Amino acid sequence: MKLILEQMPVVISALNIGFIQTLKLFFVTLLGAFPLGLIIAFGSMSRFKPLSCVTKLIVWVVRGTPLMIQLLIIYYFPGLILNNPIWGGGETGRFLAASTAFIFNYACYFSEIYRGGIQSVPIGQEEAGLVLGMKKSQIFFKIKLLQMIKRIVPPMSNEIITLVKDTSLSRIIALQEIIWAGQSFLKGSHGISGAIWPLFFTAVYYLIFNGILTLLLGRLEKKLDYFR
Image 1 (cartoon, rainbow, N blue to C red):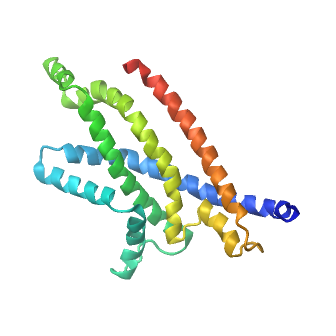
Image 2: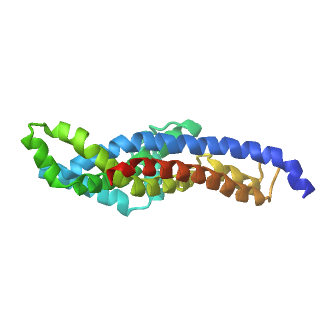
Image 3: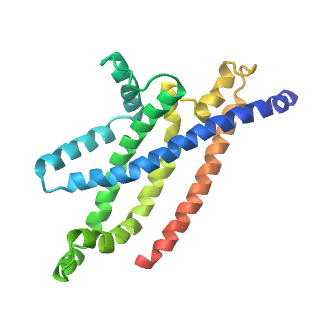
């Protein structure tokens, strides 16, 4: 116990640095995946068949393959196959590659949630808007959008919680997120080796962050109850 207390400041400092990287990947993914997912949803619902078919195929492939494989392909393919290491080296390059993979992966999942939310709004409301002389863009933003948001909050909340945990997959390309930091003390880091207890502390970080997100998303869902 005395040894653990002596090691605690070093471990907590390293875990904090790793957790900041985890938070950065989490928020960058959401910022990119939310709008991209909506664009993909419009593509899959397009009446232009070639566009909708290609979009649905891409979504099927992305959702049907592991995110870990997508990370490896996106990070290593340009350099090994195309001889063009577009990501560069170091932590910045790994973060860019991980962000790209996560944004595209989660955008495809979000697109299906968006599509389900949009299509769940009764068609009669769109027809009523057209009768009143509204444009389709006006109908979407003034009638459909808020109702869609109410319907998609629960499934979107689940995906957001999953994203928090999925960020740990980025360690497959050596991105130094929080689990990477915790595991490093098993292998020998900062003069500490063979210590497994830092990994248990990483779970505490995830639990606290997920708990905060659950409360915030729960409040958002309650605020949207007026659409009942």
